[in-house]
Length: 152
Figure 1 (cartoon, rainbow, N blue to C red):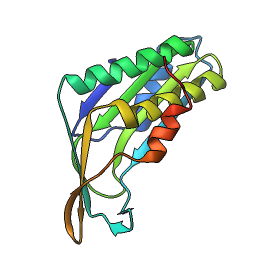
Figure 2: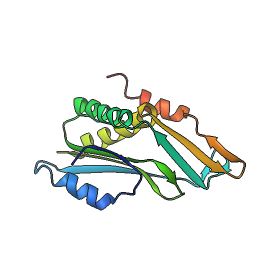
Figure 3: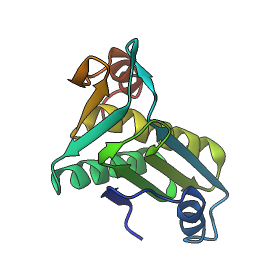
Figure 4: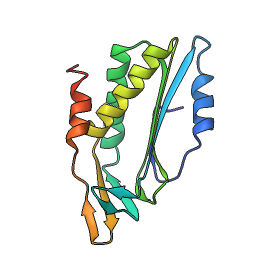
């Protein structure tokens, strides 16, 4: 199983975690994060979000983020799935899953990966609102979350 997948189709969280767990008998903890499309952002109703990316560049950026997590924590497995294309509210956008011997490392690595993904991965998001389409700007809160990890 590849550690990174960027795709349009949805994913089955249970199936992905089962494959991750089955990779190594030393695994004692699997932590996952699933991001979904919200129906509101910055005070406006959102009917659809479209995600764009640069194929190849995006996968490499995600793989690099996983490698940075591996350099910090003893992971036995990691998986990032990120969807692109048009998505409706409540649809899954991203899965980050980390497996390690103990929960602390898995929690920290999972949080690290999503924090870096939000600021370092080359995705562009466009929302459809009642006032028309708009590009989603980077959030200060995402930069602050990433900053807590310091440099690598």
